[in-house]
Amino acid sequence: MNYWLMKSEPTAFSIDDLKAAPDRTEHWDGVRNYQARNMMRDQMKVGDQVFFYHSNCKVPGIVGLMEVVREGYPDHTAFDPKSKYFDEKSDPEKPRWFMVDIRYIRHTKRVVPLSELKEHAALENMPLVRKGNRLSIMPVSAAEWKYILALEKRVSSSANP
Image (cartoon, rainbow, N blue to C red; front, side, top):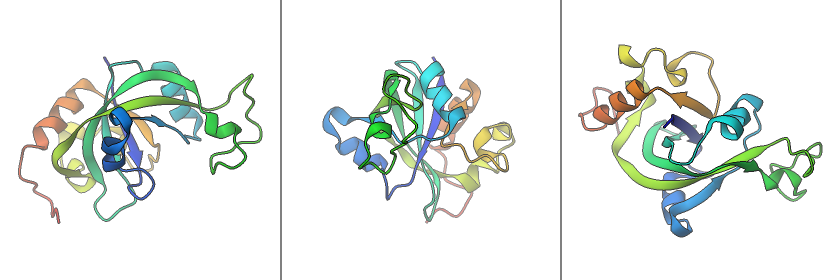
């Protein structure tokens, strides 16, 4: 099993939106970065565990857990001229963009903010906390996964409004 972190702006798609979706399942569409696409297309497998991360908000951080329930398949939004994710160069016969389906597992016991994640030496190699990493999808090691699950149970040492 692999572990991942997937970012979304809560105003675009939030952990609550996923929880409210039919069967608590939704496709993760609109990824337009080749490295993130490759991870979804080639590496994500059914059963992989995923942290849901809210970005570009007052307190960016990990807000929930989800799992991959369908492996990479063509992102249909790339073919729809009415979609904000439309890509005129994407061809259904040779799709350029892919997505996976994810299912809500639970909210974290508290938001685990980015500021707190950056405080822990055990997470210093995590792509999320490294400067300049702006990918919306990134791998998480098994050790980082366990560490963060333990962190969610602690009282934050960071200001957590």
